[in-house]
Length: 382
Image 1 (cartoon, rainbow, N blue to C red):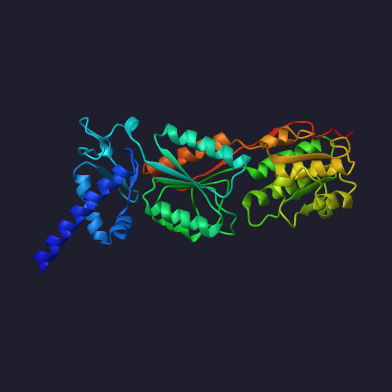
Image 2: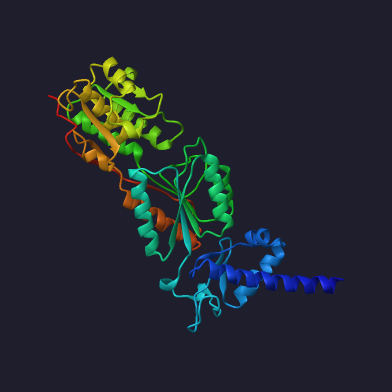
């Protein structure tokens, strides 16, 4: 009976190997594209993981694919002029560094905006420089983010760059991938409770410098308005930078001048008069300047002030954070904090590829410095 079972298994994994070749051809996979994993093949053909593992090992021995520990199975380069689907053996570890390719990098984003679009474009350009393809995933919520991470890991993704949903703490799925040593870099967020590679803009110092800029322009009654912090580290650090700048310049923190929105700013209606911003301005007539937590809130505040008959910047200076494209084209062009998305993407991809290359350094945190873009929304106050 044992010999019969072994013979059947041998026949079965040969058939699965043939099916994998058909998948490669039907999907028009290119060299270094991921091939379905052992788990995916087991579900697809109703076989055991051992059978699918033997099938992939067979294809690897024939040089059709190559396997990377903890990363998955990938289509090999064609050799000897043969068409894809009939390659000779190729050990990628023996390739010169300049010829190595690392497959596919996933970029997971929580939403699409001017800011995130610039990150996507810059990341795609950087990934290409490393001979990789970019897979973009947009997540709806925290559960969807976890699902995307799980599916990508099972599919043998080479590495992941994650712009997380707003969370109190690092997700369990991220921690699992960290334990599995899957190359993973967090961008635009930092989780203080766990050591993990991350690249993010220095939101604290950007806000500190902008508040200092307003102080140097002669302002002392400086308000602050933002969407609710909601466990988002960038919002919290911008608020902290504002507070610290006031304290360092011996300006009392007046909490009536601070406003966190009860409803998030509607980016589709930022050119309309906003009731929350209107009440905030009316209740604090002594304010001469307002620091806004992001450009959308700043643009909404400018439109609201102008429709209230309050000239900007003659009576009220308003500044933002991010330097979205629209900031330069509103009635009073916005002075704001610029975030260098190209440097963010370049640093994130370089760090990720270091991990793909089996770097065992301790987790690294990279802060990208911001800069102030001066336009017409601030007036020197004598």
